Length: 94
Image (tube, rainbow, N blue to C red):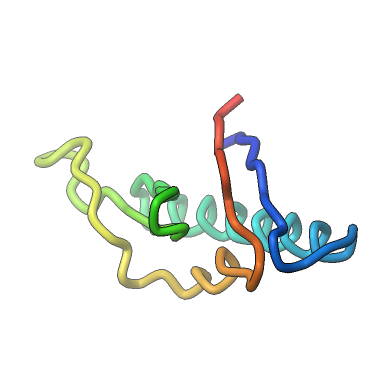
């Protein structure tokens, strides 16, 4: 899982805020990868640009319902995706 995330800092300024946001996003991606490996299921982060919200989704039944993702209610690390004053504007896989 590799990606590029463009972040906006409307409320916070400076390199320290960007550094914190980057570290939190990196932590969330690592935890998503670990959860996916432990459960043997695919996880997906969905970025809603209109609501400025990130949702964690998972594929609970990959054999009987492939490609069907639902909200991952057991996510204990979603707080790493929300940083006050920082918004995800765009996300691309590379």
